[in-house]
Length: 502
Image (tube, rainbow, N blue to C red; front, side, top):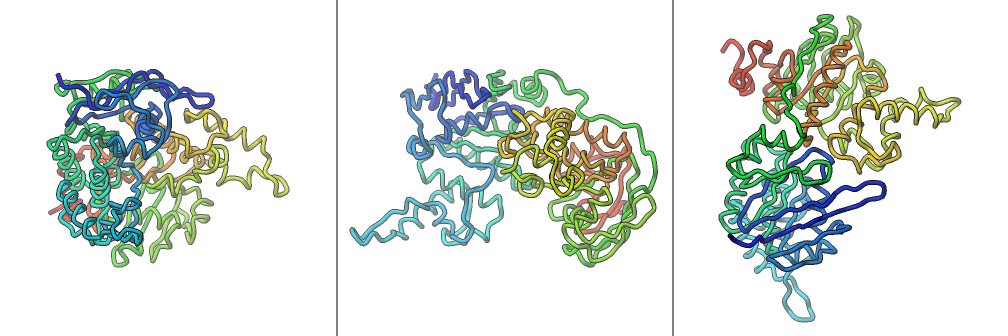
């Protein structure tokens, strides 16, 4: 059998107050795609940050092609042929493709004049663009590329650094279905070229499609591995969470008050000539499905007051709610959990306590001064109620896993007792175990009388969670589906612009 190209043996990493990795081992063979999966907080990112030179292990060994290696920096990792494609793209869209690929390591000529060899940069970049299937000139400004194409540029950049092992961290989290297909095709092409790939994703269907082997982490330890013939959704979930998730989706008690939340003739800046009208009952989860660009997020942002609506009215419990700003929506108990929680749902440099209590500080203040004891008490109560995994309420939000960050966003609104709650892509980048918790929280809220609107691009999720589904196309609702009518075909029929009667 071939010798592993990469071996991590007995890797342990301790941070103050917590052991993030405990005696973890991983091997990757030449031209192999290894799926690395686990719940949020399982240690995947920590392990890859050690391999990528961001952190150093407290104990353990790393071997490259059989030789022990010391990786003390990102430069060390690159020198050893380890490339890291992060979930958040590290690109400069004011430069062209070639400049991005060779930024900081431009080949020079002209002796002491140190002139950049543009001809060589463009020639080498073109070679690597072809390897990832991008048919663009190296002189193309990066801003003209889609996010998926920019991600392929990142891969081309890693290949230009002679990467033998590529770490891909949630590479498809912001991609459309067709873009994800192109990415997975690229992974297969790289494998055929002898490049090894470590593919980290919460989208288990992708892992099942591209991985030769799956390695599972749970609570900072090895939980098991699956050979190619053993890889399926059920086996992966069992190893990730230590149990079957038969009740991933839970049913509710049913609607309690029809037309509790009513939207009539809403027009948004994204689609000014289209009108949206819908209603949500108390205790109901209304799912919004549609293709990327259908206008679902823009609808939620207009109702929440982030973007001022161009027309229409909102009624809550029969009374009109004029919304000119987010402050107006919050005053009415209408809250939004945004698609991009890191940038718009949290202040990541602030603590868990500060994030949870931020929207309701006035209620915690006396004579203009925040009462810290009451603030801490509220934060502790919410952390306990939502089972947020954190060393403490003074931990910065940036240091939490994606699922726990989502819980903090939810906690801050639950502290204000919502009437209507918008969830925009509630489980994006969240593992299957945390998804189950989020779904149960949503259903509990609905059972307690909250009207919930969920926007999701995950077809299985929108059918599993929703009581009814509204489908949008180019700023308009093309139809509503009751639970008995839920099928992927019915949703896609409406999503491409056909009406229910067509």
